[in-house]
Image (tube, rainbow, N blue to C red; front, side):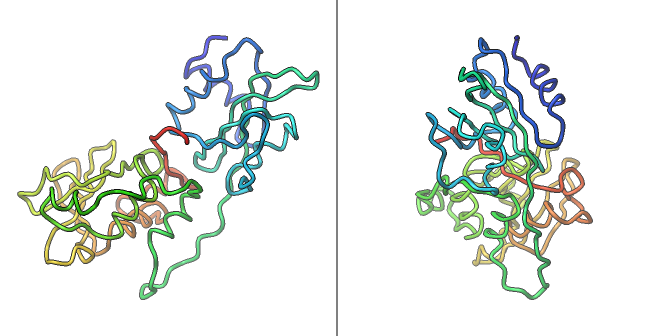
Length: 265
């Protein structure tokens, strides 16, 4: 079997949108399939390694992928993508032969409660819930004092927590979180903290001495500046789940995730 992205599309189409799995030919290298999926969905989470299941795996971390294999899974890695879990690796078949496998399972998230306008909300924690993020903090030891000294300006605390929590990657595989802000628009009073493949730039207008009060400004691909009176983490939450937001991503996916660009560890 020649493994290409087109082959992967065919295999996933055969499994369909609901729960499903398949054993693949024994001569297929499961590492190649893992690499293809990682190119598409980012760094995976390891559910099973050398026959031992991660004891923290539950419904929120892809446990449904393991159900068809019972105790026969040897190595399974998983990705959250929209309303689906995707997994691959190896498992023993009915004859006890270790073979490559591909599996999908429905991914459900707890209902996200509405937030009152005057509520005191931890928007980073809410973002963790919205994306179903289950991995440990990716960059807990960022030397922010050094970064801020180099930039010559303090940075908003919610942005720093987002970088520490999620690390390098993109929300819904679309909104890239900068690991430190870009100063390309500093002459316009803007500091860029994220961007999209459509060339929209998500910025702060650096007015005032308190960075936690800086408003978000979107510099659209056509050069228009669109202001929003909120912080960065709140802005990301809103565009993920509010279908009426001008820059909404809710029209594409009902369930959201963070594509991690780093290798699994």
